[in-house]
Length: 498
Image 1 (spheres, helix red, strand yellow):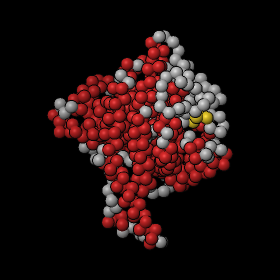
Image 2 (cartoon, helix red, strand yellow; image 1 turned 90 degrees about the vertical axis):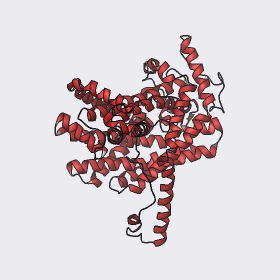
Image 3 (cartoon, helix red, strand yellow; image 1 turned 180 degrees about the vertical axis):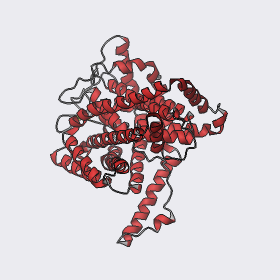
Image 4 (cartoon, one colour; image 1 turned 30 degrees about the vertical axis):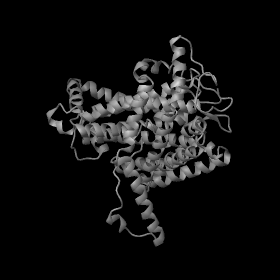
């Protein structure tokens, strides 16, 4: 995910105010006002834990209302992937939807974010990352099932959906749907892609001295070739790149774990004892472990932000029921946090990393990898960052593009205009200085999350209703199949979808 690593906001400092003014003094004053406004909103959302409390509460809410679905149907979550490569002319396959969502989910949070959690909260933070991931699985299920239920067909006859669509059709709140679409366009459509491009070019420049502009130009060209093929091209790319980069990273982490197998019991013991302050060495950091573990877990898996339902809605589900996509995307949360973040944690902890290390998150991960595999460790992490970040650049396009229908722009002209803006932002971001852009991105994402969490809680009766219908079929050993009107829902779905 794309949050800045510290997520601490405050009004502009005196040094920032004394930076060389813009050519137009009025514009400069306007920029100061905007900066302070963005800072105030971000401080409320992030520093005062508004989002943290909302997401944890939503995780508990849906876990209880859905009878702890993430535990009761854990095995079924994997079995749904059988036959998941099926697709048709209207939608991509369930496997492609999972890979597309993982393309956006898996990023620097899995590498740098885990290191930040450990450095600030100790090994115990990893335990709380696991806890919040298990709660986040219920949120991911809820929002993805809704995305699939209230999907529409665009002008090309392809499925599109997401929070804007279930807000408009399920709650009949078009103004709120438009607000979400604006936020996702600013965040995922424009800003996040520029930030990810900047991460890639910075890594290449630091490691190999490649000029940022030329690296950015290559990123822009390659991304342009992929996204111009539309959602199907993005999904096809994701189906290739996600298993490659995910399995590659897991294999390396597994090899390191097996090589240090004698130390693994001690590391696991340290994670559990530190989480509850039992270990005297970190007994005073239990609060930090809980805070940073929960924070980084939520930031990594994106559960509740409203991004993943875009991918879920684009699929032709198998079984043909909206709940099946909820199960698929619940698996995505598990893979992102329980598997990939744990891999990074083991790499760091087996290298002796711990709380209080004064280094940037990604540097801590690089040093740990270098400890295990030598000088090539830093290059491996740099390559992983480039690969993870580029997959996010491409997936971001798909998320925002799914909302063009809300503005009546899902046509050739609308897509062309959006694609040009997107590519220009990628090119600009590759060599730009991004502090203010980061702040605006976090604000857009924070507002997205607030809107989405309110919406899915509001739509709880629908989520419970379609879930009961699905699992009743499973209990009767029948293949679930949803048809419009077969169980009560809020609002209505688009004609001809179900």
